[in-house]
Image: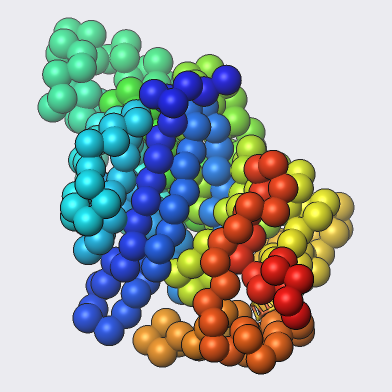
Length: 316
Ligand code: SF4
Ligand code: MG
């Protein structure tokens, strides 16, 4: 069981990429060491922004990222702990994150040399080891990224991330661009790496089918807020929040799906002028008067299950 010291607590509020927008609003999430948290929502809901804050790529305007139970931050203090290379990010499109003029051997070997993790005389064997771990044949390490398939390129970016010996991976739509059969292979690789290296993941996806297979817990995000968070089985078996329920209803059955693109009825409102009260009320089939005026707090509704909906107050 994870100890408090292992707990990776993350608390954010009010990141504003421009003065008028809260891309993320009052998100409070924890991820225990060795766990995979799936973060799901439609595009534009703020999940990529959250991933970048967690990875230390952008700072929050308010709130803190706590790493290894570091709880030295006062609540009002604006701070992000840059934990690199402890935290690595894996993006959707490896073509844009891999330097096309570098050979695989350099792509994977560069950071460990810069960080002094490996002496130069050992770098060849070290790079081979990372490639094998990521499921690539080291014989191809003299090649350039464009000489590989999409799935192989994503394995190259995974090998590059592993080469700096991270503890935590933020995966932002890391399998979204891949064919479904290749998706499954890369997801299995992520799970194998978690087991072998005790890695912790924030796994961001618009695709509930992807996180179902991979995640220990799932957090559902809507317009910058977490609306539900629970163990994966509970999200799928007893979703509480109407938004989660509509996401699940929009997912085709896993056995005959080509892609489980979740499509919920109605337009996603602009994050520049989010709806009052519960952000979901214009699309919610259960909305009532209070939903338009009052923001629902996220509440514990079962042992490890949280949801932000007024229906849980029994005051509907
Ligand atoms: Fe729907 Fe109201 Fe619950 Fe929001 S608070 S999800 S509008 S019932
Ligand atoms: Mg995104």
